[in-house]
Amino acid sequence: MSAGHASTAQQETTPTQDLVGIGFGPANLALAIAIAEHNGQCAPGQTVSSAFVERQGDFGWHQGMLLEGATMQVSFLKDLATMRDPGSRFTFLRYLHDRGRLADFINQKSFFPTRVEFHDYLRWCAASFADRVSYGREAVAVRPVERGGLVESFDVLSRPADGAGGTGGAGGTGVEGGAGRVVRARNVVLGTGLRPRLPQGITAGEHVWHNRDLLFRAPGLKKRPHRRFTVVGAGQSAAETADYLHRTFPDAEICAVFTRYGYSPADDSPFANRIFDPSAVDDFYDAPEDAKQALLGYHGNTNYSVVDGDLIEQLYRTVYQEKVAGAQRLRILNTRELTGVEELPDGARAVVRSLTTKELITLDSDAVVLATGYRPCDPRELLGPLADECLTDGQGRLRIDRDHRVRMSDRVRGGVYLQGAGTEHTHGITSSLLSTLAVRSGEIRDSLLLRRAGSEELDRLDRLGADLGEAAGSVAAHSG
Image (cartoon, rainbow, N blue to C red; front, side, top):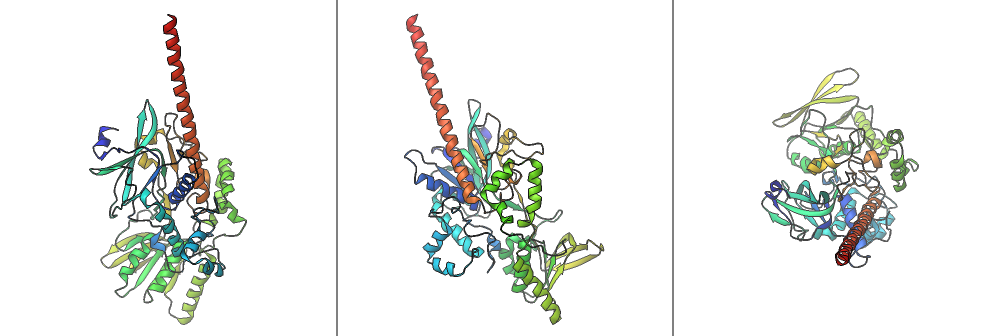
């Protein structure tokens, strides 16, 4: 470890972990499950040791959008385990049985639980790994640990996250020291998720926020009269946000602003949904670049900037009925774009331009909610000097092996794996979605096991070579 590294954190005194997961959302939670299932069945001495670092103070998944009544867009069978092992103790059905609601859920005759219930399922799973997770800590760097010119392991540096109180967990995996903590691992799995995407030139503020903060920010506005809320975006989250604000603030006007003519329905037809099958990842990975781009174009309407058909019809009925009543509160400002937002002492002023007439209108609002999607994090931001060891394609994108491992120079023996974000160009549209988490976590686990077996075999051959060299030297000495 470099002197600069040692000045901010002490090196661990416990054994090197097989892996450290950065982030503990659904993706790395699924990996923790896959590892736990292996450890429960493997021979003594073949277990996989792990630890995870999570910046939130506790497990949480899109908590700002856990709207009452909102349902999942994927089947409950695409949980964290079923597609890999239907007999797992971490399936959604086992959760329902544990909660005493299995028969009640069956009687609903639905494949789609509410988002609130699925979040409770995720928390139920995460509770089994509390001792493996350091909550309230943010990973700030991954540093190479070299031996003989080879990078065989990594030091993961974490510090207390802003506004998150750290809880126990992973107590035996690192040592507190100064401003940071270091955990050493043979492999690092990055599951840091996505970052909110804001329109160019727009910054968040007291009255301008991304929809991910909806349930954290909107309730604070209830104690005063309301004028208007402006919602920017045309996807599922935008439509849900407009609907929520319309129901929650009956004295306010809701302006839905988007560049399309109308909300576009999501294609969830059976044949199109095959793009989310685990086998589709193999098809995509092996396809030439032009075929990959074509597939992403063909099936973007299964996931991007689309809305559930029932919600579209509900919003349209609301607009029509309010026109009939002569008191329109839900206004659809289509074919318009947001050109600027100004924070005001008691709200925000949005400036919107028509794409067809170029007319500008000003919307003074209690809040402007930006339901403008997410962007992947660049894992190289955490890798420091290791970023120079990453191999890229002709477009500067990371080269990712089929087992989700970042392809690096030959001198890097340890593994850096990506969970979802940043792998769409190699693994397809499911990369940042729930659909293949169960299978993908098994693939990463199996890759770790395979590479460990290969490393152990190389070590054995090295020792054998050294022993043979010593024996040959001894024979030569005696012969002399």
